[in-house]
Image (cartoon, rainbow, N blue to C red; front, side):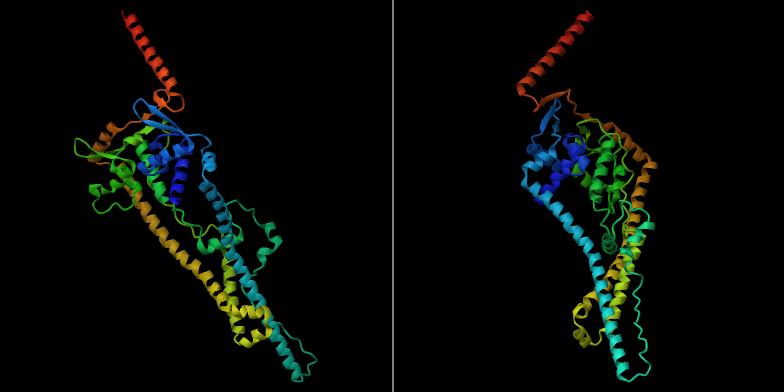
Length: 437
């Protein structure tokens, strides 16, 4: 069910981007989905929202969807309403999850600092009692509270005066609690839609070249081509996805034609396809350098504080005697220590993992760019294939002036209009003959 709803959303968005009048080939190319899937999805969507069909005299079909397609779907399907409501709830829940790591860090640090302070006060009081009990004659010597350094000032971020000299925030920046999550786990995979972009780019290349291409024009967008590249087995998924057919040139070269991508509901938009599929390098974090330093500083302070707390809680009876926050810190000590270690270990491991992934991404981008360079250094065989491909190119635009049938008007009216059209054509031919005589 979730897959069907996702498919409907993909097709609906493609229809909207195309201006609500489309062919199956238009949708497949815009969304980068297989033609069979596009055909089934377009038919289901057209039935759901009562779209109009326009059949050209050549037999090709265009679909005209209502401009309020989203509203129609939303009013008819309780699943879409539920999905829309759940998406809003999930966004709120996920935001709470994101900021919870920063909140836990601050609470952990506050608990550690308060527990250490109480333990230090208790130790100071015990030392003073021992000195007084020993009959000191110093007339009440001064007692110094030990000062424990836990790294940089952890409360600077809460100072309302700190924003006065800080540059204005941009919309792309995260707040501190969001930055903590970004520091720990990053901001998601920027190439999560790589497969969708791949097939969209392939379809764009096919349409930009009139529906007939050679393998060298497609390889800059594919992944591993396998060992036997000369066999061009890597083109099979492309042919399957967009109903392509291989054509053999007189000299034996193979050209791939995609008839259904040569049919469109309107003139092709002028666009230049990318030269090759470029993967986006991953970023360690979208947080600013200041936010990263603050998060790392707090994490370091949390870890050092946990170690200091552990050294001061070697005697469990002291925690039991003091009770309250000290007892709580004692019971959660291993959790606090584990959180402090993980808070620094996870970003450190992820940093090296991101560097490794980016090296692989750079290598794949370089390989695909090298494939694209082949088109600038064509061999005689490749030129021959491209010349043959040009003979197979073409585009059929389904206009509104050559329709054989449309569901937008009554069938009787269409028959009368068609009859009037035929009579007018006959009259024109007769007048031409009469004029010729």
